[in-house]
Image 1 (cartoon, rainbow, N blue to C red):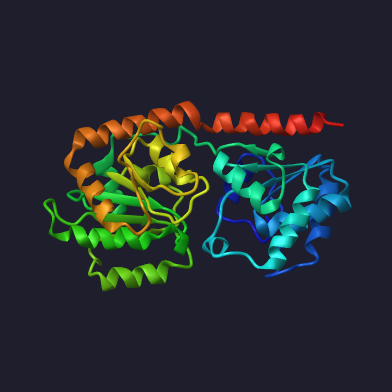
Image 2 (cartoon, rainbow, N blue to C red):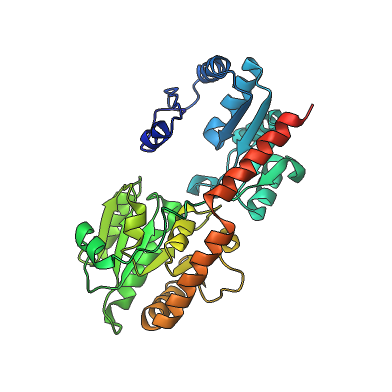
Length: 337
């Protein structure tokens, strides 16, 4: 970890993985490459795999210092700041640093083309490996009433859910505004459960108050019980301005939930190609309201969509498939002269 171990560290250590913390200072920390290099030498690493801009330059330098045989860089998505554009310095640094990597990984073909254009790296050196979900952990459970009681979620409401970092790029406001629109519709106001933490929480809480939705929205914060929370929901909505590849989408699909999503980034690559009528444009409250009503009023439609979602994830996005693809890439790189 560049800074310090987060909430997933306990899961890694339980699986007998060592977690090393580098306590990176805010901004540029010129101690970091030597620290990573020292750890790489200590552990006699053959491959260093960096993920995301914060690790790009430092890991490339560390690999050179430690003479690590192979390097891989993972491009997994963008923040709101990324969408608004990088400065010249950062663009130049990325183009220079990426040349020190043997290979890059993105999560879908659209991201592959995007990263090739941004970094100048040849598409032939960018492997597409989709994320995977543990289908034995994320599955539909016949315990909705008991789970709702446990988490304090109303039994008699149509529950919409989202699991995400509370960040402007996730565009949760459009869901809140759409729920407010549906107040007067038959069936009453949907109930919105938002799972996650982030810097945008105070803004969203203020929006809830402004829209008069305090009794209709529940902020559950960070949770390690995502499978159980997904099984409390009737409908999952992904409203982002951008998604490279959403782990929470495939987790919701694995739990056999019907989904609605913005047609952005690589989201369409995740869903069954034959499935239509589940997309809306970012900030298109009118279309989203219509789609929510369809899913709420047509139980046959929502059940059919949910079954297709689960089947598609099992066939294409299991964690076992993901592990095999990474293993194949690492072996391929090590076999090169």
